[in-house]
Image (cartoon, rainbow, N blue to C red; front, side, top):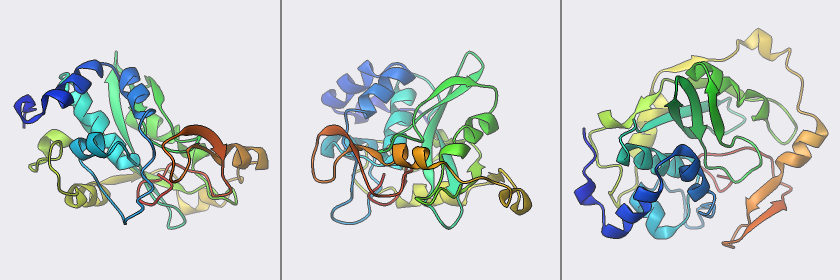
Length: 229
């Protein structure tokens, strides 16, 4: 599947033209408020994210993938799957000069952008391991998906106004690779109290389109579904 630029509006094309590097894409995502899903769960396409100007992690990941694709780079997703204590997180992996990095939309101080310094997708995924914990500090990251190439997705995920639930489901059930076994998980140390305090810092306040860097009493992590995106 090829990128059909003619399906984009002129306004959308102007935005995508500016987003010509992973760093610029990440900088743009930082200007988009978190999607707290006040009217129920969403899975918006890049067009809908640009229209509504809110996004949670998989929505931001799809927008980043579309921007990369616009400039001739592969539009990829990477699912980070947690235990049943936590939701998943989705990032947009990219490769520069033989090294992997990731673009990430999160409302927290953790699970953010990764510079392209990782030799493999596994290395990239493992870089998120120590940041993925519950409010009690229990580390929950369990597996990561194969790189999910959106060029193989037959549906219109870029400009559709319909929710992308089928795409999200396909990513969720795609092949994943375990990070650690159950016996090794029992050896894990909980995140320190100072880490948990820092992790409660929020970039966007609920109900306000203001970038505040505010502390929250809620557990820290970059979330896919719920309002903690």
